[in-house]
Length: 209
Length: 84
Image (cartoon, each protein chain N blue to C red):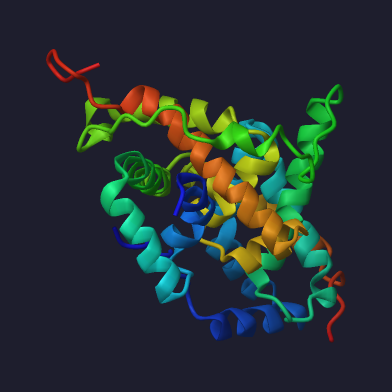
């Protein structure tokens, strides 16, 4: 069983050229950066806030904040990692505002290690996603990931959906590398466990839901 | 290798970041432990399904509106970013 292939992003040098131009006052260079990453920021924001309007606000606020603070971006990390860090913070603020009764933190330790140990080990159908229509599948995936604590789903989204490296994820979330790895393992196992309810092989019958 | 040890290494294994010796120990374990094989395989599928899912795609019309709003605010703040 081979390793999963990471997502590939564009070369950094071209991006740095845009950042330098934007820093020097070229608004259209900044617009290119917005075009490059607006979809990613929107996805991340919606995964964290679980609310479309909040995600729209986060996209605007994060880019604006990035623009205002470009002078502080020193280029030690990728622009995208720096932008994600801003967007995650904006999204968490929205989430806290919407759920003031619950402290929302990326640091929260959620339950014990044993929680992620697999209980459901039934194999899945060969092409489990094809058992459902696109709309049904989207509902299943959305509901399943929304059930994870914010700290877990944020790590999963950055690493496995957006393709950031472990180091970039740690930097964007201000977490240690072991903390990212531990959350990622638990997020992956919990999602797998929950999806098994929908995707496991049927013993008999017509093979449909 | 015990199943708990296998699980502990699962993320590194799926990400392909481990030395050859650990990798071959994990693969020996996978060859005889059906449960771990299934967990590994379905975890890999979980990641792939989410990666390919296109959840929360930004619709083009909304994308255009958001970008215009961002850019008009940036232009207002044109003196904003301090050049280095």
